[in-house]
Length: 360
Image 1 (cartoon, rainbow, N blue to C red):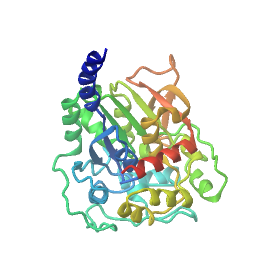
Image 2: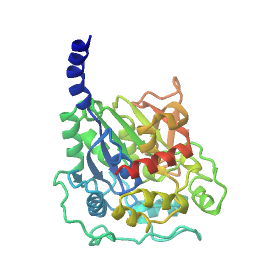
Image 3: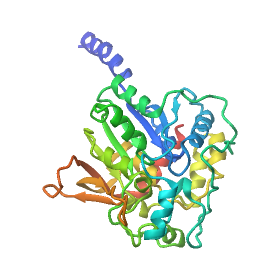
Image 4: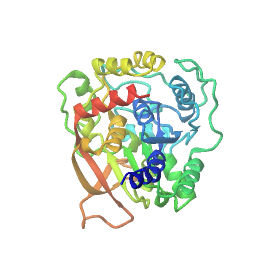
């Protein structure tokens, strides 16, 4: 039997050694812990990082992402610049909407003031073409010259059926890619995105959580990533993805980047990246991190639901709100079924976060 066993080893070992990693492209409006979690996974190949305007301007995200990759010694990963503006929505249109229907809690790049006092600091407002000085030190590597939408199309055509796209910001790049190439979504393996709001309820009982609950207290179907570019969200949600997983704001209400968790993250990460993390502001829910976590480890999902999902693109009081239907009730205008994550294992999520940071 020994010769046969050795023969089997000779056949199987190369196959095991060459086991393909899960391919992923990150599309986001900041450089976040989500990126670090995916970059710290041994079984994942990050093919690229695409920026998109949301919390920050697309052009401001790129140098931060490049510098972040330098700090963890991953300069090989391409960073591509994505859409600078939403498809139709504008700052002027948002001001008009607020004058008609009330103040928005968060407006991302168009945010100049809080409507009422809040614990969270107010990020600095920048014009779209303002110069960028990375607070972690400017990068020495350069961005990939490709446009994000073209990069996404090129990648799914190079690896058809293999690429998971994980999006943590507005869905503008994905909508543009789909409009440029009607086969784009169908050639991906799946889409996982943080966005939408169904019926979130405040879970953590402290002032920080209460401040964030203002976002959905009287508007439970509104969420920033969708609200900034509802047209892109609608196009993306009606595109022919083989699989869609949505992480709405709902499960994030039971999570929080506490000062203690942020300290653990800073200590777990490589020294230079850890020093950067130590300067980050704590208190935020783990929005994008949930998206990375449930993709890396689906066992962290506590509750999920299969729904047809679209978004309201009519300019009115519900502009950008989440629309959803159970089977048989959808209007059949192209809506795709999606797995909607309702609850997650918070402790498991935190453990996975620390594990992946320690593995960078």
